[in-house]
View 1 (cartoon, one colour):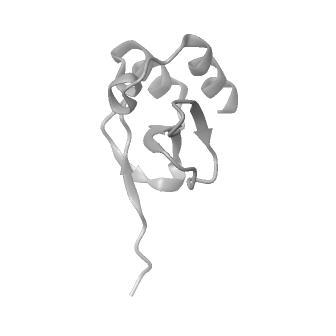
View 2 (spheres, rainbow, N blue to C red):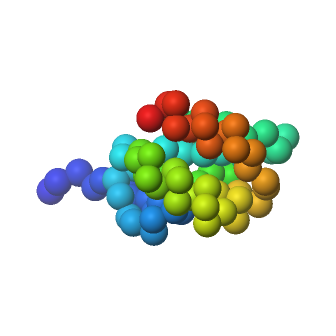
Length: 84
């Protein structure tokens, strides 16, 4: 039997993709925003497709803000784009 691949939904595009193809953004219990590279950081997470177009869509629609419940500064979106 093949190994099950964990799937997650991108908050910007709505696509269900394998977890490895997505970037996890976390709001920590202290209220900080972090890019979670290993997928295990403590806090409330949301997934974004590793694609600049998806990041721009999330910025325009406010998808990350809605998913995490905090305001996302433009500088944080720039940081995400640099990581891609």
